[in-house]
Each structure stands twice: as C-alpha cells, then as structure tokens.
Image (cartoon, rainbow, N blue to C red):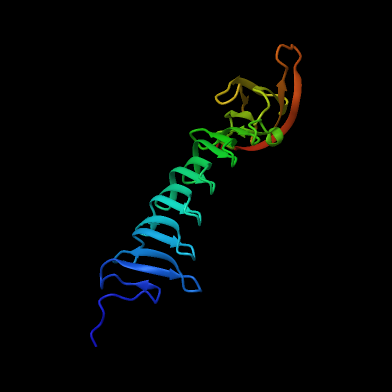
Length: 262
C-alpha cells in the first residue's frame, strides 16, 4: 500500500493539502464549530485562529506565528461588538491593551510589555466617567493612583500608600533609599514621617514625591522601615489645615554582609 506523505492530525483536523498548510477544526460537544486554526507544514499554528460562539457568531481572532500569539488579538461579544483588542509578541502582551463594554464604551486601556506596565492605565465606568487611573514609571512601578465615583468625584475609600524602592537588598556599607507615595489622596498636601528607624535617616528631593529618604549605611541583616503618611487639606481661603487621614505603612530590606572584608 502506498504511504501517505503526511500524517493526519485526527478527526478534528482538516487537511487543506497533502503536505502544505492545514487547518485544525474543533467542535462543541453538540456539533457546532468551536474554532478553526491554520497549521503550517510542520503542524505549528500559523495564521489567524478564529473561535466561534455556538450560534456561529465570531468570538475571537488570534494571529499566530510558529505556535506563538503574535499580532493584534481581538475578542467579540455575542452581539458582534468588539470586547477587547490586545497586541502580542511571541505569546506575551506587547503594546496597547483595550477593553470595551457591550455598548462600545471604553472599559479599560493600558500599555503592557510582558508583565510590565508602562505609562498610565485607565478604567472607566459604563457611563464613560473615569473609574481608576494608575501611573507607572519606566520600571513598571506604580507611582500614583486615583479612583473616582460615576459622578466624577474622587473616591477616597481606596486611598493607600506604597513604597518606591530600586532594590530590597543592599551591600553592607551602602545607603538604602526610598520614597513613599500616597495614592488616591484627597489633596496633594501629603506629610510623611519616618517612625522607624529613629536615627540615621536623611532626606533629599524626591523623584516621584516631594521627599526621598536615605537610611545611611545600615548594619548587616534584616531591617524594617515604618512611615506614617498624613493627607492634609484646608478649605479655600482658610489658614486652618486639617488632617484628613493618617496611614501607617512598613517595608523590609536586607543588608548583605561583605564577605572577605577584614
């Protein structure tokens, strides 16, 4: 018997030619087509994989190159409205990310490279008002945060502080530096007090906040830094300042012993 030059991939695979490009087709248990995926001569996903709802309506389009998602991935609601659009490269997010409500209103957008976010992410209420905004620096760290009610007013329920540090381990004899940012604050007047350590702490002008703190040459071992953030505000035309919130926060870092040091 003459042998076929190419192997069949199963009942769910339709061969478009004996040795050339092929298509793999998946089905729902009830018989409807669930997806169609083009394959190259080596059996790798190559081209646009399309998935469908049971109704036959297009559900998503995912471009592949050598078995990895590469290009603009689009997902749709059953009504045909675009649900999301995300760029990928070699299987990871690489660029703009956009999500939408079934009405077509923007729901979320961001710029992401792998697991690292860049610039600013924004989420929206169904009425189009901004719901949440997170600002990132060039290293993918959050440097500010905000949340709003559907009526546009700031939602201070979600106020919280966070540390900005370049590293959590330093060699013995070097300084440890950090900044503290209070996200989603009621006002831009934020006072930061270092509670621990009680000595050996200097400060300079911050990069992302008003102040950068410096723990001078901490000893080898584990250290805990505790600060207290106060969100201050006053009525327009008033000299009186109120403390709106006081929030404590701690972080830890390690100082490595310099081996071989005499």
